[in-house]
Length: 175
Image (cartoon, rainbow, N blue to C red):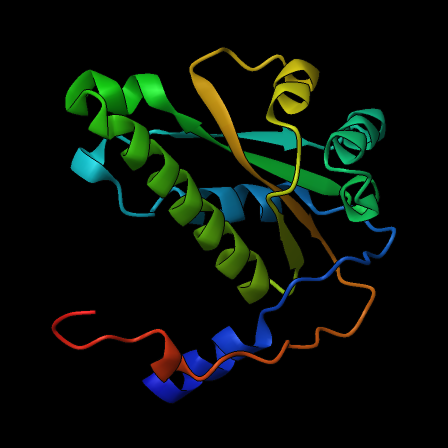
């Protein structure tokens, strides 16, 4: 793959909120999870965890916790990507909190790109009540949910939103 092909690949990935009523094959999901595990990690600590949610009733509860965002209930799988502070803080003290959040975000990005390469659609969802998600999934106190990643076969055309010119974000040598 060259840089132009990669750019087209990235442009083709966008958030999708409508999914076909079609299960994701377990082998395909396992492959996507294994590919995401290749994400970079500070000191190779891998301070992230993923809760795979297939149960429709649990997805419905998560949808409620996500401010009633229906795509969470309707996606066949929701990957709850979490930061695991204990792993990173054991090595990096308080700085490990930041590393765990960063690593969970990077893993979620790898999940989205792997899913896109497999012909699946995703939607990163950050708007949710942390405590409700913790209660629903019985997460330990040292685990923080970072995103609810809806995953499935898209039932709508992926339309890329308009973006700012990249130069609006770039600063040379200083702000």
